[in-house]
Length: 118
Image (tube, rainbow, N blue to C red; front, side, top):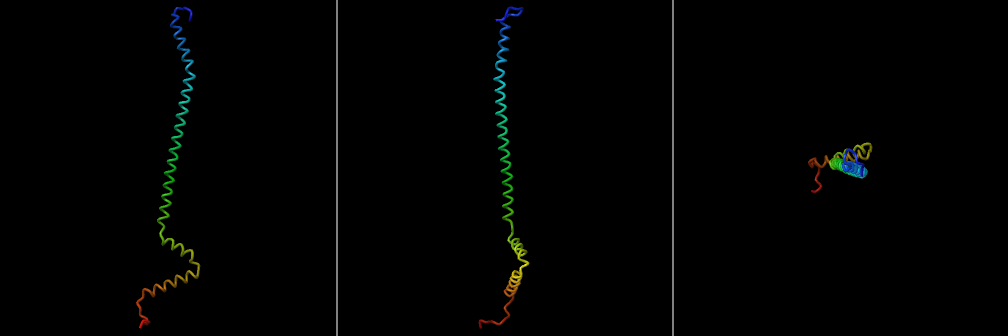
């Protein structure tokens, strides 16, 4: 107990004990706040990571959809034109194209030649 002074010794003891309690509890409280802040920052970083993955997956899905759309909308005429351009320097391909044109002309023309069926 504190010595008797002009203030009551019980009041001095109560203030001293409350000061000791505050000083004794402060390391535990500061560690508790530290752990709480660490847990909160870890949780926020996990949330950010999940959000970034979700955004990346959305972008990947859009890219794949666009690529598939381009693949499915290629016209067969475009493919034929590209093939003709590749083979345009080939004399056999030119002869085949000419022969195909002649065959188409005979197919569409009315039959004015001799009849072989009698």
